[in-house]
Length: 174
Image (tube, rainbow, N blue to C red; front, side):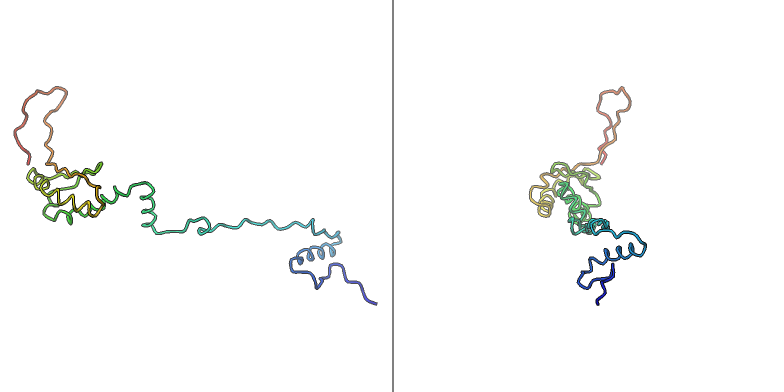
C-alpha cells in the first residue's frame, strides 16, 4: 500500500523556478485557504535593466577631452588656437618686443597689436611678415591674414556737446 503524496510536498522532478509556487501552496494549505493557481500567483514586478554609461555611449572622460569635444562641436577651433598661441606672445616676438607690445584682438583673420609708443609700433610693422609666417605655420595656412600694429591711443580733448574745430594739442603721445 503506497501512501499518496502529501499536498504541497516537493516533487523531485520540478525545477527551481516552481519553488515559489510550491511555497505559496504550502502556506495556503497550512492556513486552510484554497491553494492559488500558478496563473493567479502574482509575479514579482521586474525592474527595467539599468543602463550603464557604456550602454548609452556616455563614458566618463577627462575634463580636457570634454573641453576639446565642446570646442570642436561649437566650431571654436581656430579662435581657441589663436588665443592659446597668443598667450605665448613673448616666445613668438621675443622678450624685448613683448615687453612693449600686446596683442589686442583677433577678428576675421586680422591680428591687432597695440604698442606702447609709435617707435615700437613701427618695429612691429617691420616684424609683421616673420610673425605672420610663424603664426600660420603653427595654426595652419590662412588663419592669420594680416597683422596691424597700432601706436598708443591719445586722449580725446573734445569734451561736452560743443567743441571748437581746430588742430587740437600738438603732442605726439609717444
